[in-house]
Length: 503
Image (cartoon, rainbow, N blue to C red; front, side, top):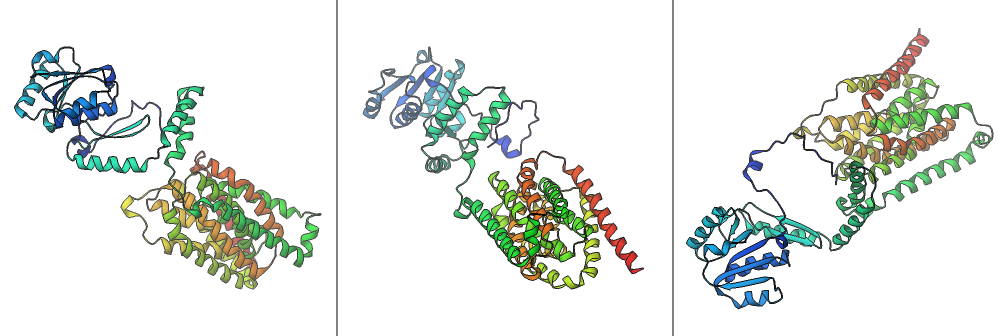
């Protein structure tokens, strides 16, 4: 729910359907006006009931030749309501502000409308929308909250049905929230814009839908999986890699390089939704890591960073859960398959490395082109095969060390999906992809190059919550240009070095 300050300077355009309804919704203080009701039969009783139920202190004069017992019973507790049992005449309009005609005589109703307009008064004629200056809509009320529904006289039945739906859907506690908001409003300081932002933040909970068990507890799932994976890897390294123990005392400078790289690349990835795998893969190859070990380091570090980033996007409401369900299973299958194939080729890393470098060179060019040519297709051109996109994105991401964001996020946005919801969904999906591919890599390779892994884990984890916060406050184009150029240069260097070795 986003309430904005005054926007009277904005241009307004209407569709043909919108132009058809010329009603201007207002709420009238009948307790401040003098009301005339003509007719006191069943129709008059219906109008009187509607007026009193919405304005208990309304000052009403009833004029009718015959007054039903039900009308007398209804007004017994309202001394400000007067009854004149007689025929209507024009003098009854003296000292009156608004008129309701509720007789069963249509000729009389039309005559009342005519003389009422001559006096410059507004009139509502029962069951004759074409004679009315205003309608009585169906009313939904929860304490001080009041919602009026009108169908422009087309279907009172639909209006009543909507009233029933809203009455059942809006909680009774809403009035208590309204009173608390009123009290809060009196305590706010600052200018109008600051007050609006504060009230928007408080009322955000009103539009949050009821969440499923998985949505409510996904935070614990992310943290539990992260702690379990890191604990399992740490315990395994402690028992199988003696160097890991000495590392805690004598830290290798490689750790600091990957710590800084993990922080920087995760910050960039969180801001633009892509490039962590691409940039980290390029950096890892430049630092001498084999492709499979580089991809393992990338994906293990992504577990915590994407878990945190995914949780932050979830808290901010940036996750499309329907898209997530379609995307996640094929993506996991593709990622595990890609990790298995790349790990199997670890002995041929000298030949795989230039292939990965060419791939990252291509992705760098793609990122650079997207920075200057971001186009969104129309909504009816949205990508249909989301599952296939997830599978290919997961496979390429694991097999080549990155590309999930570059492939999947860019494809979703180019296909017409909302950038912010696509970003949140891609980030939280990547947590599960990174977890499963990491387990595959670790099972196949063990604890190789753990300095790089640990550095990336800590650096990216520190950057993750910061990146999620600034994702809408940074120039994505500038970052994408810089990332594209750097990735292309580093990848090109790896390709050239391989060619020189062959020569």
